Structures are given as C-alpha cells and as structure tokens.
Length: 195
Image 1 (tube, rainbow, N blue to C red):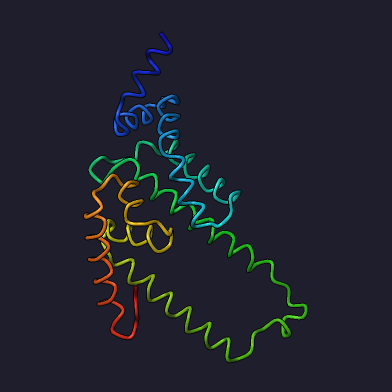
Image 2 (image 1 turned 180 degrees about the vertical axis):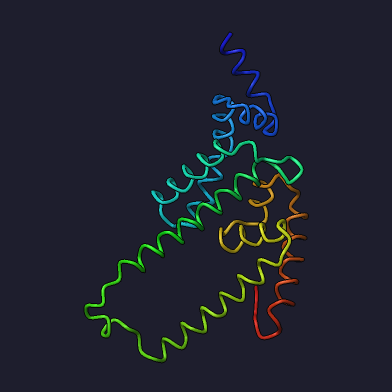
C-alpha cells in the first residue's frame, strides 16, 4: 500500500503537492525537493560560486519552504518560480551576512598600507554609485521582468534555461527580458550602457 500511495503522490502536479506540504506532509515535500533541488542548486551555485555555499543556500531555502509552505500562492506563478525566488533571496541574504561579518572582522593594524590609492577609491566610489542606481532601477520593475533579468545576468542562465525553470515559453522570457531592459535603460538615463 505504501508504494501505491507513493506512486499516487508522484502523479500529482507541484501545486497539488504544495497543498499537502501546507498540511505538513513530509512525503509531498520530498517530492517537491526531488523535482526542484537540481535547478535550485544550479542557481545558488551560479550566484555563490562555491559548491559548499550553494548547498547551504539550497538547504536554507528548502527549510524556509517547508516552514512556510502555506505562503505559496498559485495565482503568483509556478512552484518552480516560487522556489527559485526563495533560493535567490537566500543567496542574497547569505552574501549580506558574509559581507557584514567581514566588515566586523576588519582590524586597523596596518590599515593605512592596505588602503587603495586615491585614484582607485574614486573608481570604487563610482562603481558603487552605479551599482546602487542599477539596484534602485531593478526595484521599479515588475516581478516577472526583474526575475528573468536576475536569472540571466546574475545567475548566468540562458533564455532557454530560464524558460525551462519558470515553465514558460522562450518567447515570453525574451519578451519580459526586452521590456525589462528597456525600462532599465529609461530609468538609468542615456549615460548608462546596458547589454
């Protein structure tokens, strides 16, 4: 009987499995993990650049999903896109934690010798200003456009890979990318050059 119940679960769509996860069904959660952990790891690895860090991010993301399965909303997109959004956010949070930790560990012994020359500091300040402007412009985009741009530029995924991850036609992904990049160009002004 256990095998037939397990087989029945495998036949369910992701959205139906998430209903069971909401009720605390660990077997349904295992199947969701089986179906999506590979692409989740791929995104985390591309963002983190480290296998162990990516594994930590995926584990953190799926633990969060298990605890908050009730927050999944079919109307806002597929289970896969929801999972990838959680993984993306977990990776960003991990970077922020690491950056904060590193900044607290700075010692002032020999700090003057470690400071870059004034010319490099000006370049770094300009780079940070540009990054802040781009982040601000990204926040103005609709979620669907921001998601495909983040996956393409920060995750290094191709249009085809993004389409597969989000269960969308490739043309839809390209259209969202084109619209999002056009809006970014307009928000950033003519001096910013985007790909």
